[in-house]
Amino acid sequence: MDTPNTAPLAGIKILDLSRLLPGPLGAQYLADLGADVIKIEDTQAGDYAPPALRAVCNRNKRGICLDLKHPDGQAALAALARDADVVIESFRPGVTARLKADYATLSRHNPRLVYCSITGYGQDGPQRDAAGHDLNYSGYAGVADQMGCGPDQPALSNLPVADILGGSLTAVMGILAALVDAQRTGRGRYVDIAIADGLLAGAVVPLATLNAHGDTRPAGADSLSGGLACYGQYRTQDGRYLAVAALEPKFWNTLCQRLQRPDLLPQHRDGDATQQAQVRGELQRIFSEQPLAYWLALLGGADCCVSPVLKLAEALAHPHFSARGMVQHTRHEVYGPGAHVASPVKMSGFQFAIHRQAPLPGEHTDQILRDAGYTESGIASLTKRGIAR
Image 1 (tube, rainbow, N blue to C red):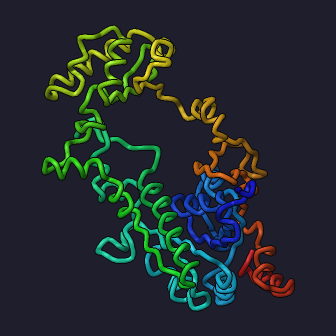
Image 2: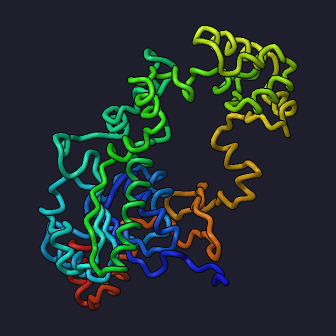
Image 3: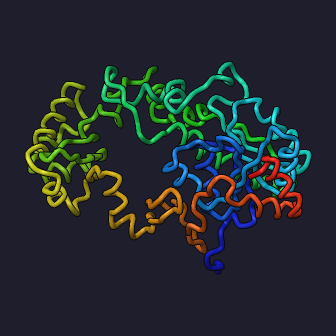
């Protein structure tokens, strides 16, 4: 029988040297599952993510500031690494070696250490030193080419899929796999995560089209991007949208019956692009005749894969996510009030909770150094000289 509320990663200590989004969010996923995550920032700019983003990517962590350019700051990091399980960093290749914060250095202090580097393009290859952001990685991975309503209408997503899918989630996968092996063998591993690699690995739908037809279809023309009338978003009379995803015949049949349009039944996924465009136009005409609430009432309870396109605030207030315990509202002492989305990982014997708000820079410095074996006078010396704060 499960022990109630036992965090699966309790006892795992993680040093998070990363900044902005991919690394901090991945580390937060692990913190939410019970790991003791220590956010390590430099004593100057630190993690320069905007406060609102910092607040939702760093909860359940402790915070310390160290000057890793100073030998005593490097010594403090080594002391922390001696009993750590994981280090996560997101500097450009070569930076951690100059700071003596690289895998080769820290693993000498702790051979079972799992060390994960998250970069845009990885530790080798011709792009390794190139600067980039989510859109650049999507461009190189052939994913940006698939986003949009057509070749002349590329789309930008406010969900940074490269950073999260290619970076955060891929890093968590690698870290957990290496942790299992380290516990089994006593030897850690170096985990090289390239955000562009992770996104490329997720491009399975356009890859299937490429393998089957010798090329991908243009943006807006494949089955899931607008090529089928039965799969798309349709504007309603009041300017809202319905998400129609009636890919299987049974869902399409139910939709056509509710719309009292049996003539559309045979035009589900048959015909060329011209015919699909005609069906799409007819569906748009139908849905534009009534507001969203009308369609939700008409199609409510019908097994036809039609749903409202909610705004984020509406999603956070939806009864389903409330029932799943997915939304918590908190107030940070500096960043103010805000909503948090809970860990999406549900498992027996564990209940997610926000134990700590995102730490302020250096909020737990004394406590963390004390845990690492520093005396009060040693801590005072580091802080007085600006090596820790």
